[in-house]
Image (cartoon, rainbow, N blue to C red; front, side):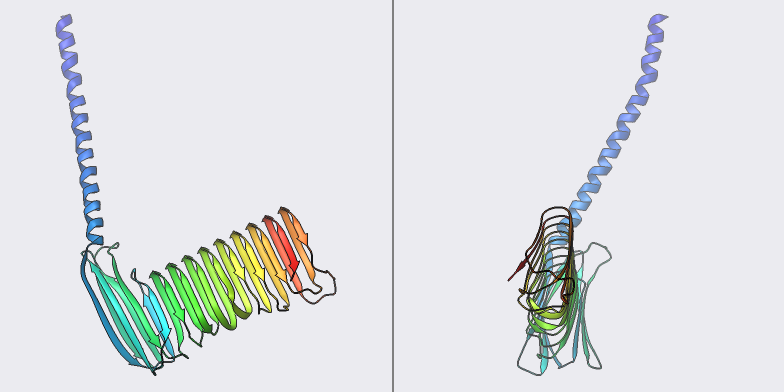
Length: 306
């Protein structure tokens, strides 16, 4: 009886273990197949099925608008003709086909690029190089790609999700915004607004009466020529180096040093740091018109005369 009982016990407990073992094998097989599927789709994303180039010409427009929702970049330069030349390099993968369209509406030329795919993660790219007359206003929205605008004497507005923004030799107000990417601007205009969630902001080569620069993670540089400037970095340093007089300068960091080099004159100075040294070497007067406000939670504050 004892032997029989042991035999029954062994028999009754073995079957569930076998079923559990088979269950884990099935789960493992499913995970493996899923991984293979994801890997295969990833490989298809990187395989170019077609690469093509195309050039189009349009009459000059007062405003150029580009909406590039692909992985491509955008370059805008100035030409000598009174026409707009659009050069495109298009790349399609096995999961997405690059498509583009151009439309003229009144005094605006609109260019748009998309990835045609049933998969949300299908990849393609359309790289634009657009040559415009000098006085063309430029507005660019890019998904993933760098944007460069050079030589325009008109307002420039650029927004990217992931990509650097570079503006050079521009005479006009600029509004630049990147979620992830560095911002650099050179030129002059009535105003300069630059915002980056993650990236440095360098406006040291751009002169504007009104300057606003903000970044969550990254350093900020501001140069001469402003009348009012508001600069903030959550995590990063702020550097201002100006040899021109101004009305107000406000610099703020949560974590980061602040260094301000300003003309040698009297200022109303409001400076405070919770953790860090303060070195205010300019002449201070409560009745002075120019005002400097510098605040840091964790970081040193330095204000020096030129």
